[in-house]
Length: 230
Image 1 (cartoon, rainbow, N blue to C red):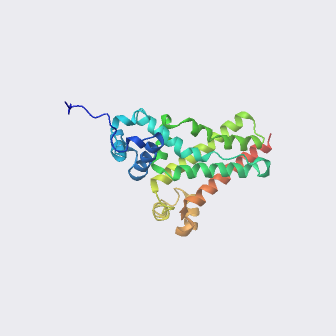
Image 2 (tube, rainbow, N blue to C red):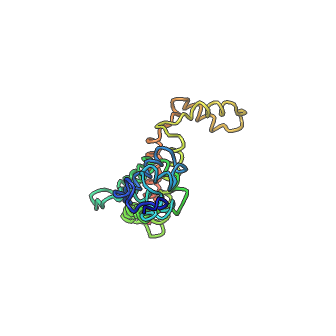
Image 3 (cartoon, rainbow, N blue to C red):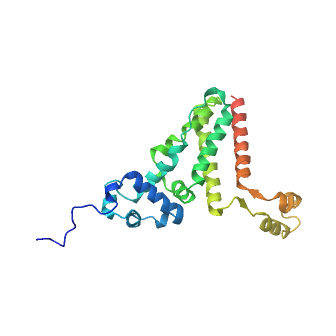
């Protein structure tokens, strides 16, 4: 006699090929296309055409999925050691660029990683190694290395949050800024008024790539000055 009230022991379509990697790949696609809020274990199971309970054999909850996604994205950011053939400041800039690129390729996930420490897996921590390595070669003291690395990461995180909120290569800052500055009383902010007015709309055009490089160069120059004072 067949008991129709119970599910057959035979796996549903898709469950035989289910793996942690397959789950994370599907989850990343959902997050990239629709955002973090669209990712639920039930939605993930539907995408993979499996029973929701089968997901828990690989990842126990959504927090584990998010940590796995961070691992998936950041695993490719572990840069090889170029040795002394590349100057320390170029090594540092390359590490910063790689870190930013990892975040900007998946902006929805970046927002989650930056706002939720539970999403930071061990592999994300390991991505700090190129920063520490370059700063150590600059000749900084341990505490200086720690502080400089944190400052650089904070810069990248803040920049990435702004970039993710705009979702374009350029940011039209000029029209609003010019209008606001021109509306100020003559003696309210004279230096700001003079500089912004002198730059005009063309001079105030903002490109995220050049903005990032400018900020990175400024920070690197400051670190170099600190190293010279040792």
